[in-house]
Image (tube, rainbow, N blue to C red; front, side, top):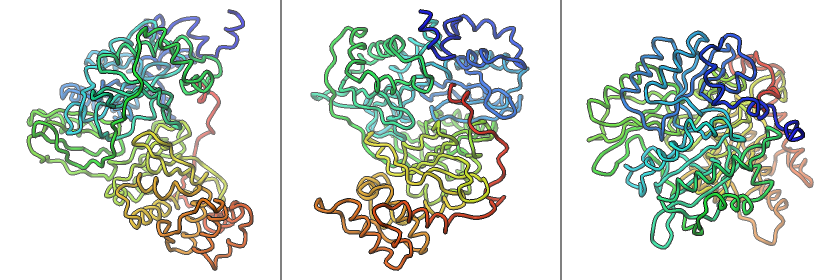
Length: 581
């Protein structure tokens, strides 16, 4: 036991000394101006954490299945207004209240939890807010309403003294009974996806997803009435057998990588004590969603586009008032937007003021000390937003490698970084493309390890031009049928060559490779066809790296950074402590 204790990571050692449930009464006498590292760990389990460079606090609110009452909206708005808080909608259909002063933390924590909204287990090593599609139970493609299932799942783990903060690492859960979903759920640790087997609808189970990985098929089919018991067995198995040593290798993904899916499911079966059926046919289809959507029972829905997840108290009051007047309902979605559902007519008095509907952007440097960009502000001018919105291209932007913007589970993904690669140190981005995310086939591939901020728009606009020329119905189908038949080394060089020539050499029109031709030689020949007079062609021998470096230096390198594009960054590099958390 002593040897095991020495191997445990720091957070686990805190848990062994005092469980978070046992710690909780201490917050009544805690000085929030002088908390210890241990206090930081424990407070996260109750939705209290420091997330800004000013060291103010943030409260994270669990909005069950994204469903919130107008009364709750009004109270949250009132609190935010009275205490000058910033309101952010999260990618798990929750709410964060930022810039909470230390002297207000305890009081506001109690006020929020008195509203019928829980802050418990919204951070730390817990089952996070369970997500489903915003049109759950009411959408035209909704087959099984999952809200009652989610309530039962939540009843099991919420404020369960044996589970509060005690898991090896967080568990993200998704479940959808809809044929079509606004966002993909394959980034979750466990995902119950609509499926059919022998003529009866239920759920296929997928496990081991995270922001950089696709959840894998566990080859299990569950009927609706079996989901909760299986979920309980799953959580207890992970809690018993999960890895608790090196902090960066404690996710379910790492456990499955170490022991394999078969052995893990064997442990689950011991706790489940029932037989399950093999997976059925996955019923998840691609669909683009508009500003208005038709629902069941001749009702309608409206998507209120937020400012990349940011909303004001006045906006919430206005939305709540309209919902009450029209007897409609407000729901939060994993796309950072608010939805009015149950409208009698497709008519609202709101004018969407942004083009952010298909863009998921993390909190950014305004609210998170680990982000290298002010993501939400930068996105408004760095992206061709109108073109993106018109074509329903899903964009994910993360401010660091943690991936809160789900940058590899969308059509085009960006990680905000900083670099001196092109001259003076400035902000840049790693770019991903090609995810086949709707049915969980693949995550996005790295297109550029680093691109300067002032060139991101031109890269994305070039991809959009090619997408338009392809005639594909969606960017995802364009990725599947065009982008993903080429290596990323070729694609990056093709983009750089097109930027150098200020013209697009159509990928869609290029001759496809035959099985008899080696991939590199085929792609080399295509580049020669597209750019026969370009000087970089001579640099291609048995690889593309030299040609790529040549073009990057010519196109992107500069002596000094533009202060309008890349303001100086007053932050340290990501610390080890962050990765341990």
